[in-house]
Length: 254
Image 1 (cartoon, rainbow, N blue to C red):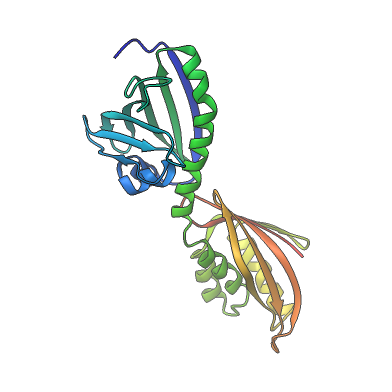
Image 2: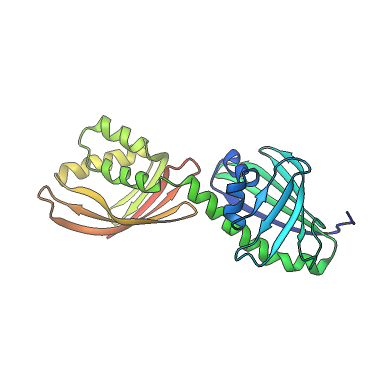
């Protein structure tokens, strides 16, 4: 391999454990999910790297140089057409570092020419954005159930049962905001919900329609009904999910 003096660097935060993130560099199905259908990787030194970019018009290839799960993977990279660089003519190093919010991904891509490096800046900005979304879609695949658990807990009269229900779907440091609430922590939330049940007995909350999820931010519409099933109020909630899949913050507007 020629000298590779030109370096492209990018760092992104992924809301997922390192072991989960690393699978998207070693499992062919997951690899293809963020590169393009038909892409493959043989995740061992000397194994083939093949990328069939979205749309199938561009193909890239190289080989794996190093695998150190779940910290690092190194592979060569270039284009089947030979332009702008031949297959395997550059080197990609991806490092995964633990972070309180999940995993910090550090990309280094080394090139033989400045111009070729500059051509890849937007490509990696785009590709790592796709990557983060694909990981999030797997990590937060049960986001609808988590949201439903949140709404259901608001109607549970028994304090112990309500606490168990909330702890199943929220982080201990939960923050909740709406027009009547400025709450921090599960104890504050529990007291507030208990008061709501006391002053507004018989009111139940439920999700309306499908959730919308992007990178761990979930938007859900809701409705509040009385004992007779009459809709009393509607609104929208925005939830922030942590790397463990639980709600870290919720904001509702009505």
